[in-house]
Image (cartoon, rainbow, N blue to C red; front, top):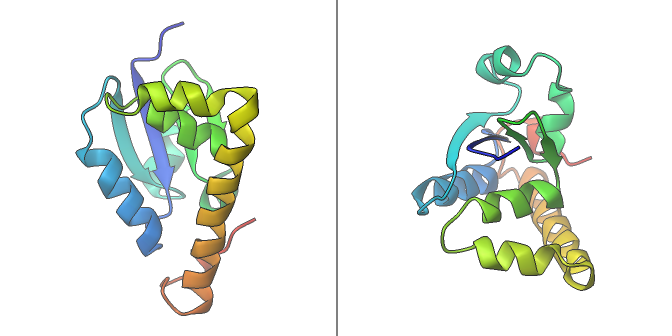
Length: 129
């Protein structure tokens, strides 16, 4: 199946996540990308079978094929959907570099935790799992 649309569920209460979502929305895309706040009524209506508490802990991307991507796989599929970053997504998905992609996602999660601890996030939704 070919992916034509991705839905990115991001933590709308976290400034870092909102910034990443804004950046993603400004990029030239090869695939349509919809952005919705994780755990929102819209996200729950669109994806009633998802664990919406988990979508607040880790970025989650749902493809129109029904595939669900979480964590580093979600970031890689987001890069894959972007015109400028598709080639990079293929490189980062290789076994030798996949660990680096996981590390970048772990660093982002750690930054998110620091935002929460420093009062940079306005709810406990910035907590990471």
